[in-house]
Length: 322
Image 1 (cartoon, rainbow, N blue to C red):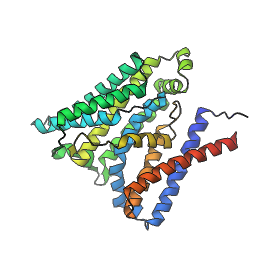
Image 2: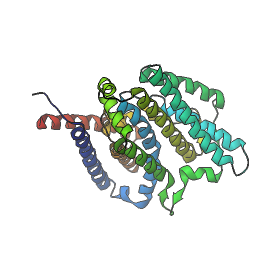
Image 3: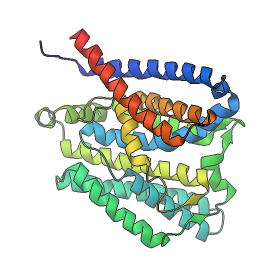
């Protein structure tokens, strides 16, 4: 008998698995670290680190739901960060920081709009279009920076990546929660969200159902560019520097986080909450390995094993329910 699963069943199954995995990993790592993992200082530290990859993963989520990855999100974030950092260093007066922030967001939107035009209007496959954009932007960033690091920002600007609310809540984590809420609302409470899922599941069927596929793709990649610019602001203010090579290893991690969180690479299936759970699992493992004195490369290897294990377990459960 051929397996058939509804969209909701598939999404919920993956969410349950990742949620259980998060609890299990937290308990095991808590025991191994003598519960240092759950101390306030470590939790706050994770609150600063998690948003760096989490916001980029949300930027990757939309394109994956439509059926194609966005390979340019890290390059877009790098360009946004470099432009913003350059402006904040060269402008004087109270308006320097607001202008730098707005400029980063505008650059992200423009990059997203460019990708959207090439993919939605010219019908170039997203993986090819965004690969070209990635390479092009990398060259532009190198021209702007000449390979140098832009460092030393005003304290008001650094609040984005290093600030705390009420003395202990990391500002980057709050920014991530706002982005997460935006994606949850858009994908579950709007016609756009339904259209994205229909397009990712079957583009021909969505077209004959009255969905404007071009418009959905256009909005998705513009949104991806915007979220990439937000990630850029968090990234450069967290490290108080911007350079062409920042975040180079994040691209594959965003795909890893999305797939682990239940976003189907084929499109149409997945929830934003799943991305949160997946990133939390990766962060708990990484922080625990650091507390135990293990190599960060070992943590990276374990992420791949976790992904494979969850996929195998998910498939096994599906077969039992078929």
